[in-house]
Structure formats: C-alpha cells, structure tokens
Amino acid sequence: MGSEPELPQLTLLALPGIPLIQPGDDLARLTADSLQRAGLALVPDDVLVITSKLVSKAEGRFVNLATVEPSAQAREVAEATHKDPRLVELILRESSGISRMAGEVLIVRHRLGFTLANAGIDHSNVGPDGEDWVLLLPEDPDESARRIRAALGDLTGVQPGIVISDSHGRPFRMGTCNMAIGLAGFAAVWDLRGQHDLFGRVLRVSMTGFGDELAAAAGLLSGQGAESRPVVLIRGLALPPGEGRAADLVRPPEFDLYK
Amino acid sequence: MGSEPELPQLTLLALPGIPLIQPGDDLARLTADSLQRAGLALVPDDVLVITSKLVSKAEGRFVNLATVEPSAQAREVAEATHKDPRLVELILRESSGISRMAGEVLIVRHRLGFTLANAGIDHSNVGPDGEDWVLLLPEDPDESARRIRAALGDLTGVQPGIVISDSHGRPFRMGTCNMAIGLAGFAAVWDLRGQHDLFGRVLRVSMTGFGDELAAAAGLLSGQGAESRPVVLIRGLALPPGEGRAADLVRPPEFDLYK
Image (tube, rainbow over all chains, first blue to last red; front, side, top):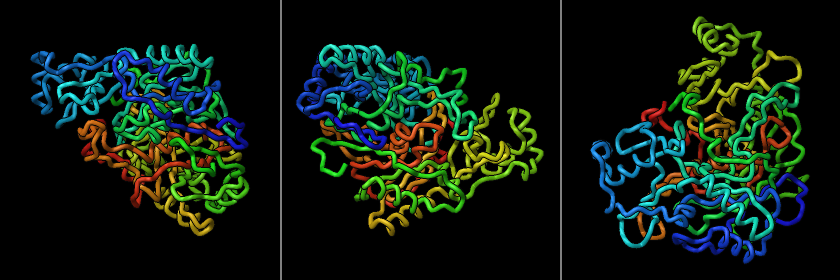
C-alpha cells in the first residue's frame, strides 16, 4: 500500500477489528485504533467509507417500536403495504412524502432528500433483545462525516475523505447498490464539464457521481449484512477538491423525470 | 498484487498501453499483451472491466449520420428535444420505447432492456474525421463479454470475469455512474436471500447489484472521457458463482415502479 505504484492503482482495504457499536461509541477513535493495529498511517487523499448503520448505532438512532403511536395516515399506508403501522409511522416521520407505494413496497422521499425504500429504516441486525427495535438513518450524515473527518485529523494528523454509505434499491436495475448519504472532504459530484475528449470535442458525460462510485466500490468489500467489514479504506485516488457533501448527489425534484 | 493479503483487500489496476481501437481489433489479444507488459498473470476470480466504447469500436459499431434517413416519428421527437433528427432516428431504432422526454433529454428503453439517455449512442470521442459519426452500444454485450472471456482463457490459461461498463445517468441522483451492460463468468446479481445477520434475523438487503458495483469501482480509476484507462483489473474478490449476464441486472418492467 505504501509505495508509489507504477501503474494507476487503487487499493481497498477492510479495516480490522471494528467492534459491535453501542450508542455513544467514538467512531473516529475506533477507526484510528484499527488503522494503528493494521500498521497503516493515513495519507492525503485517503478515503474511509463507513456504513450508515455503524454511524446510526454510534449516534443512538434506535427507536423501540413499542413507544410509537401510529397516526391515521400511518395506519392507512400500513394496511395498503402490509407493514407494521408503527414502522410506517416512523417512515412517514422521516420523510417529506411518498414516492411510490405498491404491494409491500413503500418508497419515500427522505427528509434528507434521498428517495429510498422505508426511509432507510433498518429492522435487521439491530440488537439481540427482540424484534421491536429499529434503527433510523443518522440525523445529519453530512455533519457526521465532517465530524468524523475532523476527529480523525486530530487523532492522526491527516484528515481523510469520508463517505457514509447506505444500500439502496434502484429504478431500472435489479439488486441494491451502495450510495453515499454522507460525505466530507472532497466534491461528491465530479464536474468535468468543459473538458474535452481525445479529439477535442466536449465530453458527453461530464458530471460523475463520484461519491456514489466510492460507496459502491467499498460495497464490494464490505459485502452485505455482516458487520464485520463496516469501514473500508480506499487509497490511490486524486480527490476532486471541494467542501463536499452527499446532499449534492440528490437530484432536485424539479430536475427529476422519475420523481 | 501477487502476495496473499493479510486483510480483506481489493486491488484495482488500470492496464497500460491499450491503444486507440479500430474496427476489427482483437480486444482479448490487446488485453493479454498489456497484462504481459505489466508483468501480470491472471489468477482465478480476477475481473476485467472494459468500457463499452472500446468494445463498440472493436465491433465497428460506427454509423455515419449522413447515411441515416429520419422517419416522421424521429423528426417529431427531434423537434421536441432539439436534437439532430438523424441521431434520433438511430436512438429510436436502438430502442423498444421512449421512457421520458423533456427539454433536451430523451430517455429510452434500449432494445437490450437498459433504460438510458439517447440509447447510449456516443457522439464524443468517436474519431478524428468529423462530427457526423456516432457510435452505438455493442450489438450483444453479454455475448461480447463471453467471447472476450473465452479468448483470454485461450491466451492466458485463466478465464477472468468480464464486465463491459457504460456510464448512465440515474433517477434521484446527480452525476453519472458506471453500470454493467455486458458480463460473463459470475453472477451479476448476488443473491443473499435466506442468509442471516449477526443476530439470526433474515437480511433486509438481500440481492446486490454486484456487476454494477464492479463497474462503478472501475469507474473511479478509468475516469471519464479519456480513453487512456479503458480496461481495469480488479483482484481480490471471491466471485459469486453463476453463468452470469448483465441482462440479469435489468429490472423487468412489471417490477419497475418508475418505468
């Protein structure tokens, strides 16, 4: 990893020994400890991709369904989609509106802007003490990413790029793909407009969803479901400059032909 | 690259010295030559991600717009979207239907099943002799992938996984992301249904768009527009078994709430 590669090369590495996370845990500290155990020192342009579940747990975003009183609308949607009305209540509270509803599928526009199933609320892998706990997405994942970046800078001397990733279904395509829902330290959308191709024509494809490509790449390694690989280091990129936030990856509804 | 990593690790490497491609060029041979120059021997579970443009060029999928006679429908759509009616004629010929049309945007359902802008027809980076040549997607990219895989097996003794990638815009999200439009040698969609999480519950997310994650990861390295990094080697995965085809990544219209 450390030497200058002769060929353009990326390395993705799952950080070892990240423990099961409890509310209040310090993710930056745990990540710095893991890097140290692995004998890795952060270098500029390193990116750490962290699963949203890890961040949600550290931030204590658990809700006990027994404490949730479903509204009339939640009961109606729950009946239509064969879901727990208390879960639907939480989904609606986390959302600015329903995008699609069919069969058992409930796709909403999240208050954070993302269009996704069930507002990203996770019923699996939450805790050992029963089925009634669910886990919401982080309150403000861009802010979480900024905070983790700054804390890692304090602990290690290098501020890495941060992506907080979440697994989303997609129109047109089968299978989920990891997307960036939080990001800090570089431009989430890489704007190549105005650049030219090998023959001097302006590029057809000119803005890439760079933050999402990072999330998807880390998804190859972190896999699904297991919490054994929740933090992936990506090394070898030249990051596009910018303050950076995953909110820039959200297509404004007025430019979305599929909203 | 060659040694067994201690930690779960992926390496992505842009193959050196892939030349500008002409119709009839042998991509498997050029790839094998590049691997040899780089001192790399393929190992089982290696994946090569190849841009669709490279495959289209090798397959001679160029069309001279001067030879295209637009239909009445093409003229109508061209006027509505401010496009060249000859280009629209080709888009419609490559498509089974129009998905959305607004402003200058024309999103179609490709005859291959993919929903994408302009049927993936590329006007940039095609050739030095004028603006009138365009490049269509490969005729049958899954078949192209199978052929390249088999030929590389003959040349090197190892059949690598193959992904043919194309850059697509997406509903909900800003920026393009590379997707798999051709694939061979492993399951395009990784089916984890029935597997359990750390606490014994069935996984919420259970089918991942594995082929698309590979395409997106390679997109980090191959970048946009330039043809200097059109083939990326991904090493370090355990590939999901299966015959494999990118067609499996196409959501059937009857299961697509956004078609």
